[in-house]
Amino acid sequence: MRRSDLFPNRWLTADQIDGEMTATIANGEPIDFAEFKQPGKDVPDRKPVLYFKAPKGIKPLILNKTNFDKLSDIFGTDDTEEWAGRDVLLVAVDVDVAGETKRGIRIKPSRKSQPKSQPKPRSDEEEDDEPPF
Image (cartoon, rainbow, N blue to C red; front, side, top):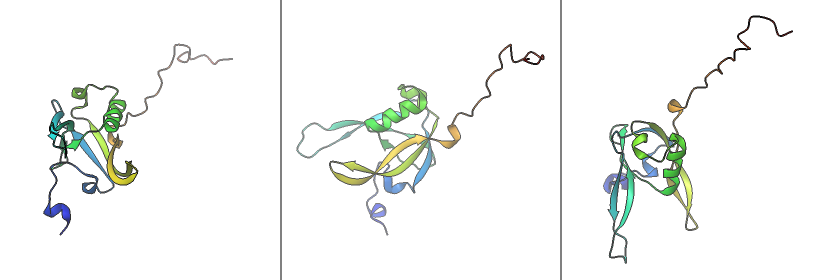
């Protein structure tokens, strides 16, 4: 039995991702806030949490600035409502945290949501049937 089976986490962790996983962001407003009590602090920290609708049973991800910025880049907007229903690739990676290497989650564009290259529209000159010489 694994530690994660004995002490389940409420949030998505890198241990729950087998290398990488495609996930679909929840519909509506996919971001909410959760409060986290910190030792030695009277006031809990509020952190953004990203919710997913697929795959079934996926836990929410505590969103850091790095992943928020990456989502903004992928979708071309920092308006989180515009992210709803879109696919992303969640990748378990080694990250440096205060001089220590730990497992973390990074977000990349999903392969199936990549824009397909469109052929360039032809200009009027190219549509002319006459040879260019």
